[in-house]
Length: 137
Image (cartoon, rainbow, N blue to C red; front, side):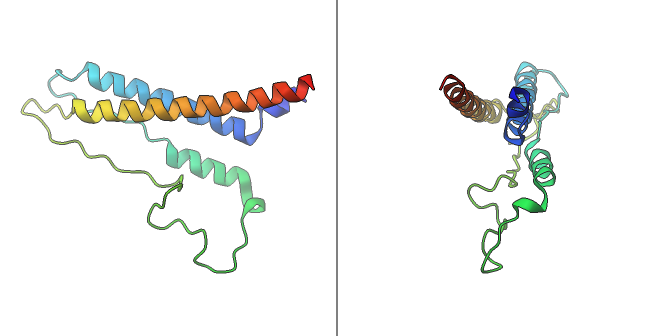
């Protein structure tokens, strides 16, 4: 019973997202560490679209919402809250030594990744806290 609670689709999605964010953090750290390495090309981890498609497949048709108009709940244009939208990030320029790492871009990505990771861990913590409350009665 307890195992099935932690194996729910929400917890599996959180686990996958935390793993992806952790890998992104490692890539950013590697980029910053190699800022002065000639010929180094920045690495990035893009897991959001893969995670979203995995969630869509696991949910199946049972969770498709009915709408009264075909224009309702569409995913065009990357609207706010659209988990499928992935923002493309361009590096400022390639330097003379063919290194394309921008410290400003990497620091921005690092902060964004840390905020997402923290928010997700807080969400999981609240869920576990709720389960603890239910178990204790």
